Length: 276
Image 1 (cartoon, rainbow, N blue to C red):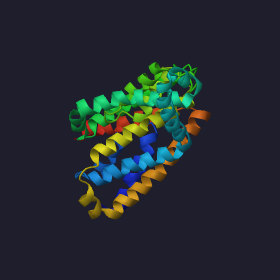
Image 2 (image 1 turned 90 degrees about the horizontal axis):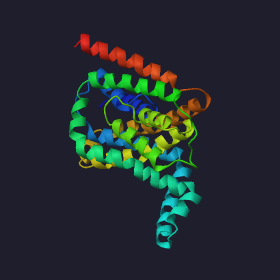
Image 3 (image 1 turned 180 degrees about the vertical axis):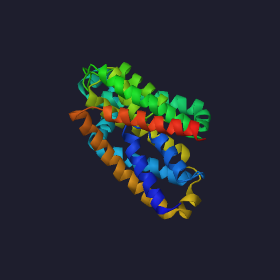
C-alpha cells in the first residue's frame, strides 16, 4: 500500500470513528475511490488500535477511576456491600454499566458477523444507512430531556446505548452517532451521552482488534511504514475528533453532522444507483 494513501485512510478512520458520520461507510468510500480491493488485515487492525489509543488517552483519568472502582466493587461483593458501593462511587457503577452495555454488541458480533461482513462489498448499503445516521442525529437532539448524568444513570439507559452500539455494526450506521442518539433519546445529558459513547467504544474496539489480530505478522512486515504511519495518523485524528465533538456538543448542536450524512449519503447513493 502507498504511504500517502495509508495516511489518508488513517486520518479518515481516526476522524470518522468518533465523529458521528460512520467510519465503516467512509472507509468503504475512500477505498473504493482509491481502487483498493485487497483486504489488508494488519493495516485494519492497526487503525483500530490507533483509535483505541486515542480514546484511552483522552479519557485516561476516567478509565483509571473505573478500573479501580471495578476491583473495589469486587471486594464489596465479598463484604456484602455491593449495592451501597455502587451508590457511593459513580465510577464503580459506570464500570459495571459499560460491561452491561457491551453485551449486545458481543452477541450481535458472534451471531451475525459473517452476514454483516457481506454488506461491506459495495457503497450502496453504507450510503443508505448514512441517511439513517443523519436522521437519528437530527431528531434525537430534539427529543432529549438531558436529565440523566453520571450520578443517576441506570442499567436501562446503559442497555439502550448498548443496543444502539450493536445496531451500528451495520455499514453506514455511525457507532458514535447511533450510541449518542440512543443516549439522547434515553434522556442523558448531551455531554455525558457523548462521553459514555466514547468510553463504551473501548471494549468494542478492543474486542474487534483481538478477533482480527491473528495472522497479521507477514502482512505487517511487507507494509511496515504504511501500517505505522497510518496508525499514527489514526491516533492523532481520533484524539482531535473527540475533542472537537465534545466542544461542539457543549457550544452548539450535531445538526452539521446530520446534514453532512444526508448530503454525502444521497450523493453516493444516487451515484451508485444511476452510474453503476
